[in-house]
Length: 111
Image (cartoon, rainbow, N blue to C red):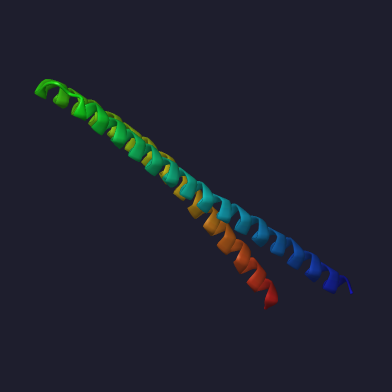
């Protein structure tokens, strides 16, 4: 009877670990999607604002100045986005490893 209780407790702990890892895994995907959506929205807004400014430019020099400012701010935002999403994917990979480990433990307990 003690062996059965130990087995059930072990299985319960492993199932809880898999469940917790799965939830965390899903939240990471949601964070990546939210970050990507926000970046796309802001990129569209910034591009629209840039073209409005460009329409009002009175000289070639002002066009070049606007384009230079837009290129710099766009590249800065892109680097920030890639850094943040890179960190999110890195966390996702760690969680996937933990999930795989938890699943392997559960499957190993079936043997």
